[in-house]
Figure 1 (cartoon, rainbow, N blue to C red):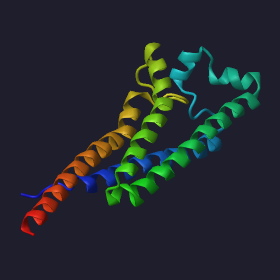
Figure 2: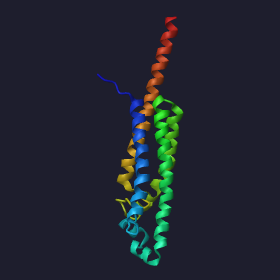
Figure 3: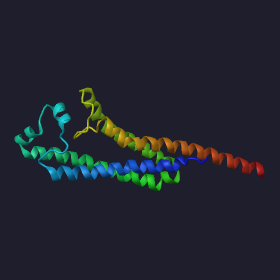
Length: 178
């Protein structure tokens, strides 16, 4: 029976999480700017949440729409840096089974998640459940993006525990053989 290499699964899943962040950080601003002044990210749930239509914003002043878009760009810029950091940690540190790297991925994912999940929770409280919008990832997108992170962290911790037990067992056998 084949045994699972939990650490190998861990760094690969965390790598996928980082790549998701990089992909969205690049695609969303590019598409938003290519389509402007047509909306790409101010969707119906944003309109329901704010009570304002995208056309009303543009009618007030097109620069206000651009300002909203640029504000979203700053968030995507941070998302890009975060994604690069996660890819680096997965490739260079978690892959080697370094506990501190796995802990860093856990904490950074948790902290970035707070900023992603807060709007989703606020939208959810307003009865807006589907939620992909300019500021809310929505439930399904959150699950899609964060599932590899959750599984990667879980597999990493299992892998570190199993490796620790193996090393302890092997070390104790070496001591008894001497």
